[in-house]
Length: 116
Image (cartoon, rainbow, N blue to C red; front, side, top):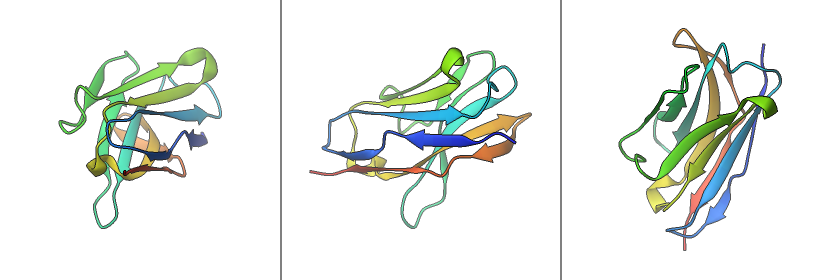
């Protein structure tokens, strides 16, 4: 089992930026695809971004061009750079590891609040 720990959430004004980090307890990036999900109050959890073992990336339409997913294999860390944040980006953001399309681990979540 791999443990995932997110950090970097907080309060930011509209138009601002945040970078979320997800530290894995061991080197898994050659085996697992990594993803960021988010869940707003009263809403279902949704996929925000994903990076495959081959470094292919994909994004939800709502964040395309504003968010960037990346990873540092040496640090066992995945990042989500979020720019031009909007109020509708407010949610708890979760890190997720997948193997063969199946989720194998979730982080505890980090709150992102976009408000003036």
